[in-house]
Image (cartoon, rainbow, N blue to C red):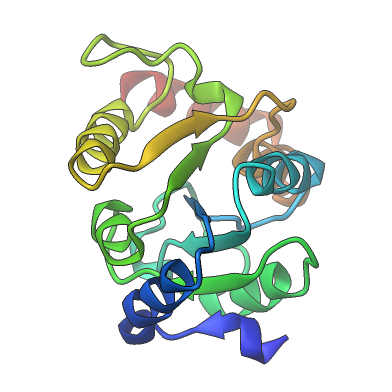
Length: 183
């Protein structure tokens, strides 16, 4: 399992070596805090686009998805992902977004979940990080990487954690929903 966890400063070299061997690299990026069936199906679908699946994760200090998040720290998330057979390598990113790690890996394919299906260019969407996705698309275009959207059912780790693992009173839940609407 630990052989699958690659240090950030080694990922570019590894990616180049794999490409020289003729391998097609697929890259997925996210927080992957609480692994669920949606993640597993996404990885399985993504892997179909190439030979090597590299998953990068967002560092703890850049995860702003709610109280006590991430639920699992970066090392725990890396180990969980590394234990998944279909994933070949995992790496901890060093930035709040995926742009830098995409540039390092230079994958053949960059995969996003089906919740990104309706995100078009610079139009508003339901995806909170639409600006990020626009930058990811521009970065992928520069390095000749194709973006693929998987069509598996989506789930939300944040929703699962907030609704099931954190025990808020009804009053607290109502208060948090009001704040969320304003922000």
